[in-house]
Image 1 (tube, helix red, strand yellow):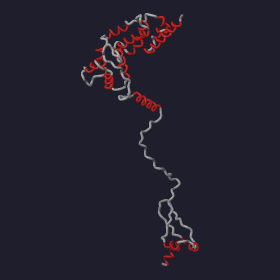
Image 2 (tube, rainbow, N blue to C red):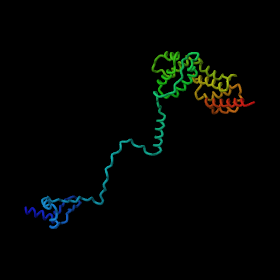
Image 3 (tube, rainbow, N blue to C red):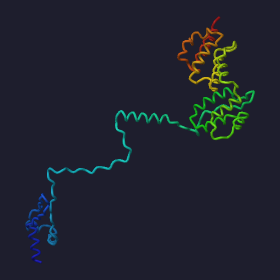
Image 4 (spheres, helix red, strand yellow):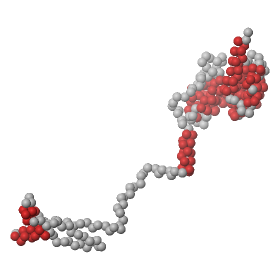
Length: 297
């Protein structure tokens, strides 16, 4: 036990022997604590416990050479989000086309609010709160263009506005899945429309002139009715309507022509106004003439 105590005391005074390990080109150094004097050891609390412990070895870690590659952090795995399009003229063009296609895609809303047609029954005289066929057919043609829904939904909405004999006309059609909303309108046109051919409907429009009891706005309304009928029967194209309307109106006005002289309608044939714009111009001129007549002595 004495020899053991002596070895421990010598280790505490002189420190452990240097440990040499073969670590390639790197050398290791032993970190040894400075020797302690007996007085210092005597004043150290727990000295007896320290003597019984095994000696600790302090080995410094090998230091990398100066020219070694510095530590590089591990790269993160790529994100799973969709790759971003690189900036450039092509990318900007692709983004613009995607937005354009998205805006042009039809947006159906078959269960939401929509503008309904007035009721049409086909009875004569026309009952109160119902339309005659010409008015109803004109509105129906406009609505099937505005309704951005399937053909089946359009047929349903057309049928909702029908009652009495007009509904029986639709029910008499042979039930078939390939019937379209155009078949519905053609059947009603054959039953309640004017039984004119395409040539006859166009001739009726071109041979319409102002009657003496008609004002200019009333004559324009009659022209519009005949023109829409010719369009429905296919004798006039939609893009020709504005020109033909203005041409026939300027040629067919037979009374109070001077009232329209300030409008200079003959000069507008190259860029003819639409029906609403033309009607507003005519009615405004009529109002001016009536006001002048009232103020004159």
